[in-house]
Length: 239
Length: 221
Image (cartoon, rainbow over all chains, first blue to last red; front, side):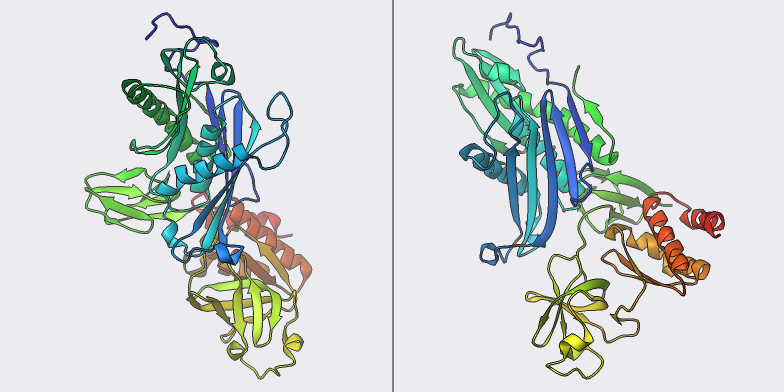
């Protein structure tokens, strides 16, 4: 590992961007939350459990979790075309898979829980911010859960392992280039979601997951504080 | 001795305890773990969680206030803000209704006080066969957070009776968060409505009964 590696924004290798969270920001929803990580801002709103339409998609054994991830057209510098895209469909599905393991969906057979995630401002790590916000919003909606989920992206820039990449780092082109590893974990350290884009060897991957675990603990503390103080903006992470 | 605190899902509420896990908690290796976001009531015997937010989930025996959404050939569909609509069958109406004259009894848009008498896979069945149930004629309907309904009712109905005595209005509190207020004048009804909203807003505090008594003295005229 390169010892004299400097990150573009001057952060330590294991230092996250400053994070903030707030619960109860959308009065119409049954549960809602905001999660901010650096310049990335995600809003999540939860509706339900409620009747599942269309009826043909109902699961008589358990409830369905239906996530909708959406980037607002002004969330990035170049306007993005509004509406569903291949990328947003994928991230919606990933979010469902990351959260489903902690939910007790069998308590509401034939119903649906709708989660709407909107990215107001994007600076990499939007799926992680979305999962963090969605987990808080689902808890706020009073849906039974085994544990909370926290998510962070771990990564490798050339040969150096870092945590919580931002957009400038994701576009890093020197040496081996960037490797992005978004990881979602429960507070007891069980991995519910892991993606990998780039190249990395086995030992480094283990190390990267360990770094993500430490970061998830910090995020979990902020999520906990936000849920205990509804309507208050809670800030965390190292400055 | 009971101790109250807000807990989040997965939080360990107590360790090495003999207390039993109550609603929304589980016990694992002597630890009591929360499974819902809410207010934990901790005593030496039992630990349970009272939910603070979320959608209304109907239970058998609940009194609900809903709106007639549709008329079927043998009953009415009632929307009571639950996960699905309830069905009020003709056989659960305490009078003779002509099969062609359902609309004469209740039209689409009418509000009804009903009781959930059965819930099964096919849906929720409602009844208006007991006293105090039936179509609403006049008065006000206030919507509140369904999780605050126990506070509006109070211990053994103490809070509701306090409002009834102070304003002279009749109150029916639906478990789904709708409150029906019926009084002799509109001013009295509005006073009762304000009292209900005051309780909803300040439900997190202790000693609410004294607060509401004081509030009535200030706002009575």
